[in-house]
Length: 152
Length: 152
Length: 152
Image (cartoon, rainbow over all chains, first blue to last red; front, side, top):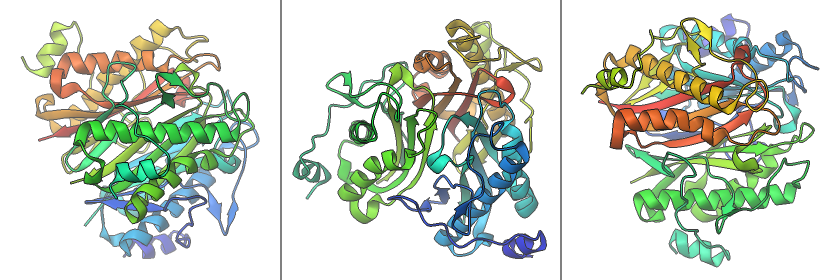
């Protein structure tokens, strides 16, 4: 199965390539690495949830948002390489979670992206990752994700 | 026009190579990539603005600061490669914006750096980027920027 | 002296390879670069300190924690390359410091990692670095560190 077929078998669909909300591009290649921009959890042009996780946004909502950011990152990569099956390795995930001062489960939020990548790419999906809390994200998004992959 | 000539034509000047304020170096090369350290908006030895954007620091001030951080990052890269015209591609910008809890326009602040890079490097200036808010930066700087470029 | 012998001569010991607390791996290689995951200051299975620096956690405690995160990052790299003497260059440090709103010395906290890397790797230890404050980290850890190195 191709990666896009796997996405479909999981009931997921690759979104259109995300438009940058500012003067930059969704993803950029240098050598064999593709770096995505920080992806907000936008779906059909709207942010899934706004506010801080542990505050207005629940853990489950933040996880759903992080999964969407990850789909948007994959779409951004597809925009650069044309076909997600050219990915030879997921290298690194950076997960930013807008967090209430008393919320300390950023790693659980990030798992929503990590688990999806493992499901799609299996052994090639194993990645390094950081997950941190922040007090504010663009447009009051609850999460933002950046993804680095190796491609052929 | 060389990149430094373009800077001059924009009324800007490349600052002296920034000194690290701690035990690290302003920029570092590995293979064809040069990674800068996080650059504070220092100009002639002083921080342009301190405090949180959306609080003590206005959006316009934060943008001015981000532009200065970007100039400092270019100076840091020059310190490693000697000549900014050896840059073959701007790869990635990381923009950290010290933010009031109610400020959600980190992307607009980051645009000050992105726009400058596009103006200087044109098509080679298109880059991936993340922009996030944080509650505190070193020395109470209002912004910090890291830059990754590809060089020959 | 090998890097591990140097660690011992500094009275330090390389911890066991850190286990990921979620669905990712401690470090990942792409080409000649090894990227670690964000390392918490875990020692013998327990976090050294929890809370915000400048609040519940003192500057000295945060520095001790950052040093431990750096040791954990080196252990993570050893897990990928087998021998720390295969490191040809420390490329970049990312230092996240859980910070009270009035704490602005993230660079001093990060120095604990930078100084250790310089001591161990000498000229090859010179690195680019960002240091930022954040309002919350996973498990309420006071610091998190990511490390990128070049290997042969």
